[in-house]
Length: 156
Image (cartoon, rainbow, N blue to C red):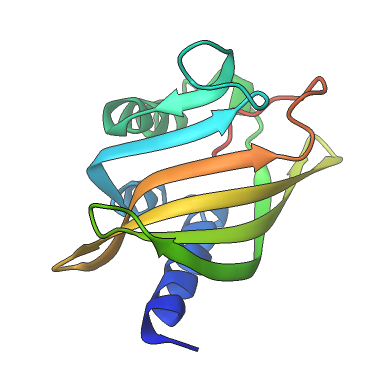
């Protein structure tokens, strides 16, 4: 395994662990200031089609603030999640030199005694920074994005 792939894998696993542990400020610190967090509704582009999420760092910060405030009523009781990360592979670099990393994710969410599973193909663009790799772009393509979804106010 190359050093870049090992570092990318570690970052993706850490991201999932931070979300599962509800360490949302630490999770947010994994993202660059110019990041994009994108969950498409289907195959359309983010400008002309409805998106489940299309957030920049400010919007992600607002989500985290709301989830930590106690006023996110859609998360009462809060979701318990487990992120399983697999099939991680390098898929080249962007013109800016970011690593393009593709993976598969299975997110199990338990809330109010009901388990929901979300399978996704995920693409990360990882920026090389003095503090290590950081997430500049994350695109989560849910396998079931085109069917009615439940409460997705927890972070994927």
